[in-house]
Length: 77
Image (cartoon, rainbow, N blue to C red; front, side):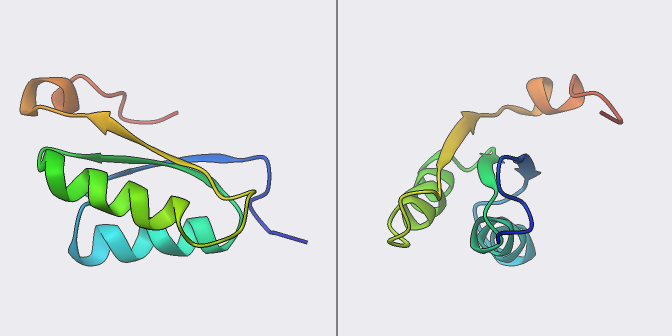
């Protein structure tokens, strides 16, 4: 059973580097991942890679992010 099945995870800074690794790890654990980054093209690439992992349960989307939008995100959920 997937540890994060039926969970949604928002990963900021997830277009590359450690953020991408974290997003991919959550997807591998079964979460639906929201990829968020100011680097639009790289963020879309990460979201596409998650969708292409081959498991139909793995879902991802990319959230358009700007510095203003990120500063408005809640500090905790």
